[in-house]
Length: 245
Ligand SMILES: [Zn+2]
Image (tube, rainbow, N blue to C red; front, side, top):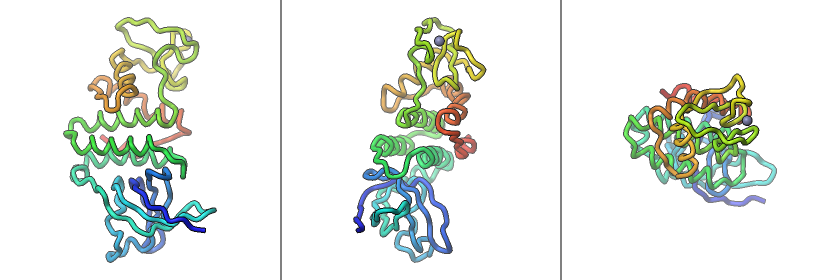
């Protein structure tokens, strides 16, 4: 028994399959992430040619059959190809970071409206931002995505004993392995120092939908972010983040 599914989805990743086909990972609004086989799409005359570029928002149709983890894509039409993003290589590498994050962290076929709307907001902001702001935008949305993945850093008091941390102007110890700020008793060898400003910036990211990060906070967040994701997201290693300068 096959159900016809018509929905919207962001292309997260594609890989060549056989001579003329593509395997695509797509973040849909109805079913979360799905794996789709686009048969013959690499032939120049394919009607879906061009619709399967990473981060394109498409209207897609596929047939969902039980006991399958890959479905055959029947049609894909571009709703928004984000030309303003695609025309700027720096923005493209930023978009690829979020594509890789969602492709690697989202479970297959679990509806996740937070991920879909987060990705939508990210691309809407990315098309508007100037080049100098791309990095802060990407890092901000990546940090926000951590909360959707259930692994947001603990920032209010010591993550291990919950004693309040002194509210001075000095730096705060942030333990990458413990997943949040720590008191002096729970200091460990994965601790990095964060300024109060960075803690406020991180809280803002979780509080508001699109809070900005200033340069100092950005630098400090980037020191621990890759290690943090590796420890708390099952050894997640984002190759696109390394190439995103
Ligand atoms: Zn403690």
